[in-house]
Length: 625
Image (cartoon, helix red, strand yellow):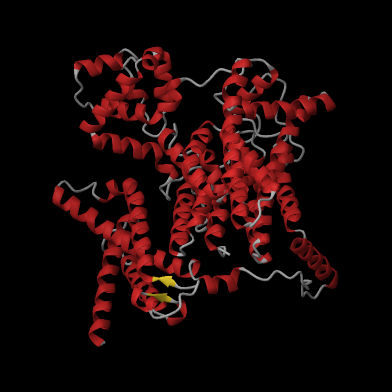
């Protein structure tokens, strides 16, 4: 027994040393820094604590032999499965982190053996840290019995009494809390609108960037219809604008009608999610915390008044996920949930270009999952596809809607080929001639930005894009040949083009847009409230995400991706595999972003994933029955 304790102690000392080395590299510290000792001690005692916690008999963390000798309870965690999922997820997290950060660790080293050794030690250190951290977190999210006692209740509507020395204040607060308990969805909707209203009044009639102005020009008929920004979203904007203008004959008020509609749609999707959780008996306090996430995090308020297709798209993804969750737990098919499933599915297909491809990726899995209820769900899924196809082709053709050019869909392959050229790699005369038939290479090194594809897209548009579209097969072979010959260049280009969506330490100023971009269309920023106090409060609220630790992680796209992966791991350990279907839409949409994004760090491209953060965690922790 003593020998086993000594071996465990030695193992923790070695693991703590490797983890300290990794943290030292990540923190850009010198080996002699006193904080390396602090790191070592903190990590060592954390590893010891996790080991003791996981060996505690009250946790029900059992190995295979113990499982055979006792009745399997729903709260039991399987040791081997927990270890495997933790290790695999830890290695994935480490790879995602080091793909961006590792060059800094070895920038002063020239010897390949030393470089490899440093990278290996750092990889082991981070993997160990994430492994223990994940096991620690899984011990909470996967312990069903303890979790149900903490998060869930029988939900009897017992009156709540708020204790305070001021009786009137106590009465008011008690009344508000009881209103929230008894009318959770409606109160969530109103709380979100109330907290977002100052942004609406300050940014009145809404935030309009150049993309918004382009759609507004289509609404007014100044330019032809285009599906570069989804035409269906433009038509929704036009419908709200036409109603507002018909009633008021004022362009500014007419635009504000759409903004208010968008706010209601976004807050309505949050309320639908909260009501879904209330149906599953989640405690009111937990629901209030989730409501605060939507109502008080500033970027939700800013995005709710920003005229972008990404905002209703995020609401659609949330509604679709909640509809699947409700249908999963229902013994009967309720038509309200089925209608939400169909309507939100159509919105996903039509409100963003990648939404169509993401839904197509989901279809085989949805058809397999709903095979036992094929008579109901197969027509629903086929109906979504047929409606989207009907609108995308016959209807858009009838309205002469221009489709996006080919270069929009091949940003990443284009950037990878450009990286090979800019690195002065050897190309055959035939390869070089094929490229020069499309673009002029004179200024390509000056224009190439590894994190921003628009420069090269414009270079292609200024060249001969028709030749590219006509010789797609030849350019695919070129892309494949160069990738096999220069895989390092391709990997580096891909990492730099996509890192913002999976690397958790990428800084990006979120929700900084305001007002109406310069236009002569007759609409301008017309704030209904203002003054130094309003402006400064808004600036501080936006900048706090880049200043305050822990809170700042809510502003990171990479952290949102990691939370989704962690939630999936929790579902696997809990052996509740049917829940994985709820993560499918977000995972498929993230995949489409990662294969076609033109910008490495654009928060709104994955706002659907950030908006669904509480959904990821709550789905993992909800009881299966």
